[in-house]
Length: 369
Image (cartoon, rainbow, N blue to C red):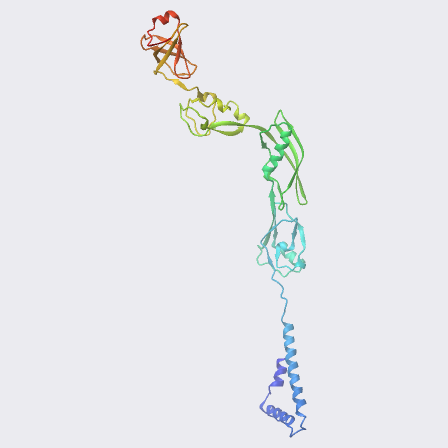
């Protein structure tokens, strides 16, 4: 087409050019032809040039592709949720009409590798413009998954066990890991308890459940042991030997009933007691850890109240040992040096019961009528 235009618009030689010009002049000027003859000749040449340019333009446009094919590449890692592996999971850049199912997806949480030979076979079978770059080309297909919520499963089981009189406050020790069960990703699974058996003597249970998500259902079999729970008081802070326990020194924790055996579980029995050894924060208490507060200590000067059927008096004595309220304590009278026994009172005094002959020998410091 270019050569054709050159032949029309550009002369090949000087002589031919001169001849063409002369011929054109003869055709155009009215002196050589009739007055109106040059117009059709000029118009015909113009139309020829325009048609030639138009044809060239259309031929150039047809030779240039307007819809280039997209570049097809591999997707090195494909994470899918459905139950089918699609061609577009392996190759990127496919047109919608090129996509098609290839195979069943891996199990939830599992993966599958498509190696280069398999990819080349798939590309050829589906007429894809793809070639492997290296022999190590591959696509890793992973299927997304979700695990069961252990707390949800245990709540369903505990509610059912309570109806079987397993206890209102219990904990479960599962034989299986609940989170090991994987389901397809998506909506939260619906859990159904099909049956539950409980052995009260052994505190053992077995359960049959079903987990459903979408169109997938999984049968679940669980077993385990039931443990009753109990709240017990423990120390809220570290405390040392000889400290008197108050209500603010205690807090509550929950433990198994088996562990609570032998521990003090009644806080009212602890308040007002004296620690017999150093204990750390959070320590549970046993009966041997506490004692009644020592109201009288060995060597301490104590007021003795000497009582008789006809009178009472007070005297001073030295405690021979430690004593709490209600304890029988030995004291030495500071005046007579005689050792007597009495019962320690909550106010720290000691009441001594003495017979009349012995009372006559005492030299009271105070007589109360």
